[in-house]
Length: 73
Image (cartoon, rainbow, N blue to C red; front, top):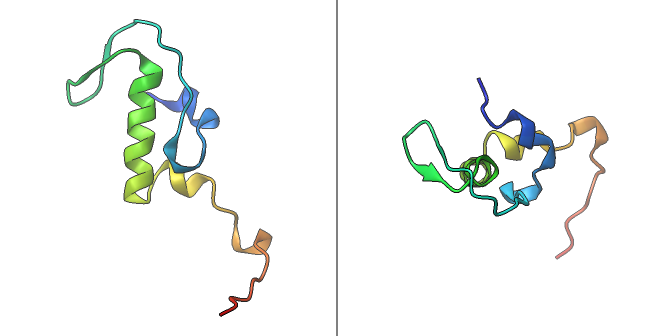
C-alpha cells in the first residue's frame, strides 16, 4: 500500500513536492517523525528519485512518444 498515493500526482521532476508547513506530526514506516504527511512524502519521493526508481520512472515518456535526438559534438 502506498501511503503517499494522494501526493504522487503533485510531485515534480527530481521528487520535489510543494507542501504547507502545517503542524500535523506523522511517522513513516521506519518510525521517523515528520512535520506533516506531505513533508514525509516529499522526502520519500526525493529518495526514490535519487535511487532512480518509483516516482522518477512515472514521468518518463514511453519510447513511442520520445523524439529522436542527435547528439552534437
